[in-house]
Image (tube, rainbow, N blue to C red; front, side, top):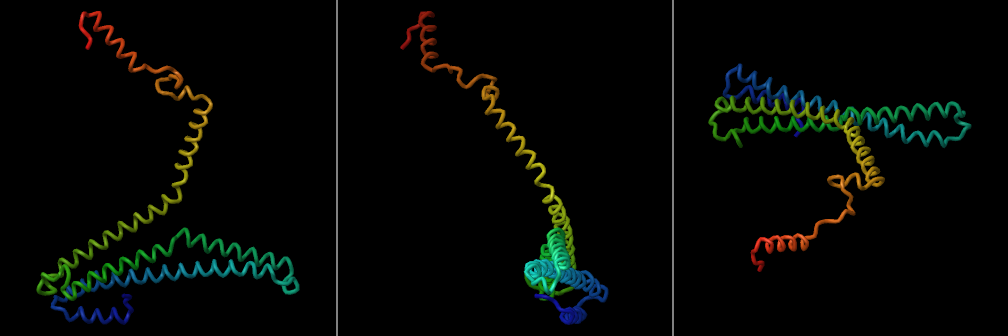
Length: 230
């Protein structure tokens, strides 16, 4: 559920009526409601930017064939080429920035974190779920603030991992390409000189020891020693 400014104002008024000290009420508003409001604003900012860049790239891409097929009587050839070039650069720039900054994924992150903290707060206000063992909001406040702090800390770590993953994705092809080239070289060497890659430096055509010959040699040794071979 999205919290509109009017809805947040109603919740603030409800918090003011809880059986808490004035300082506890203020702390609850700052650490819970203000955090939700911050996440909601960031989510709206990123989804608006995602939509703007996406629509810009889409409209610019659609206008290119339209301008190209216009009758030359409406636009001279030079003006037509300039407009098409500008639209092409605009479409590529908008799509590239949207891909690089990944506004859609950031919007999803802020929206998810906002929902997690809202759920925690509504469970506290109604004294349900993990807070059902408490009799009053004053008793449950310490546990609630601890859970909110833990959620915020985990979200910060998750966001940092998300940024690190974005950087690694742009570099991941370099070592993989190097490994592929190395495997190709090894395969070519094996084709040129197969004997150089056999175990112990021996050719695969070299005869192997037969188990029957080994058994016969053992029998002869036992007969020489005067023992009866069964």
